[in-house]
Amino acid sequence: MKKLFLLSALLIGFTTIASAQDIADNAIGLRIGDSDGFGTEITYQRALGGNNRLEVDLGWRNYYKEDGFKLAGIYQWVWPLEDRINWYAGAGGGLGSAGETFLFAAGDIGIEYDFDIPLLISLDFRPEINFGDALNDNLGFDIALSLRYQF
Image (cartoon, rainbow, N blue to C red; front, top):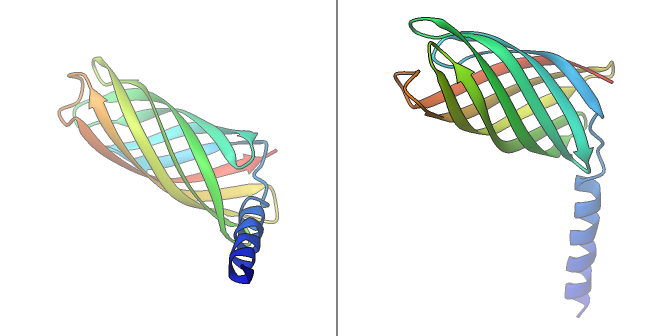
């Protein structure tokens, strides 16, 4: 019985500590990366409560044969690793154009560092499945570095 009580207390304590770190209400910045070519996106994050947030990205991409744009929306769950370091995972999708319009579904996993000043830097990996004939490859692997101002 003592072991069960101790285990329960540790689990509740860990859950409280794990969700105690706050994320910024808003963050805006640039996401620079590579997915079938170089691209830059304006990125916005909005906290939704607890450690959940919505990320919306709108940007330009230099695909193999032509330039295009991409609009993505990703729902993310955020977990603290250490002081000021978080990791996150999420899922979402969006639409884009590279000669023709296409839809895509995406996952997202990354790590971020929250500076003492209102700056957030992150590195993420976003695998995407494209639906449409606009791109030659229906599977993309988007790796990007982001800098965001938090407010």
